[in-house]
Length: 257
Image (cartoon, rainbow, N blue to C red; front, side, top):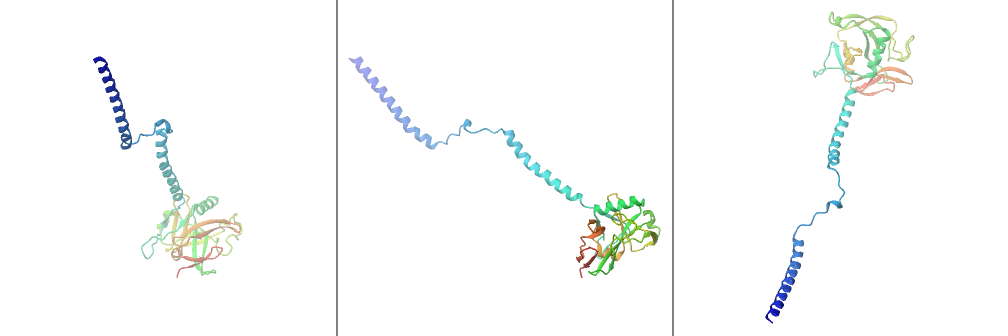
């Protein structure tokens, strides 16, 4: 009898203990999930991306921008054509060097003429005179300069200068000329005066330009170009900062007052 009572008490105790533990677990479980941080998303649910691909994409983007920027800078700088005064450099009233620019087309054309005539001392003389439909007009002619070392032997020297004019009237209406009218005619005696300035292209072509003082004052900062049009080919002054207007043919212009 005593044994049966003990067994019944043990079974009741174990049952009550199990039910109490279950109730305690149910009470604590919601609190734990509410107050704890959410579980991370399982890795197998998200597609994996190799870290090497992410790193390469991040590095390649700014690098490509740098290369493109460098290419643009190189192209713009390669179009600049430098020219230097090799005889009688001049300055304006503010002390700035008076100079002009020459385009690659004009430089190459002068080089071709020198090669055709076998005359390395050939130069393009540019003069500005009053006249034309806009008040001023520039005249161009081909001239033969003395050797560079003789520039400093005397202030005034005689040179061989052709009577060919590339801009006054019809620049290509000259007998016995080449296709673009730049072949010089018979030579005549000319002079390199004290106020003349001689420029030479720095590209190694040997192209040279001669201007007197007053003409350089009106054309400083401008560009010497060689154009090929339906009416003919000629040397031309473009981008003159002092010119306010010009005619259609480009040989006459007006300047700022």
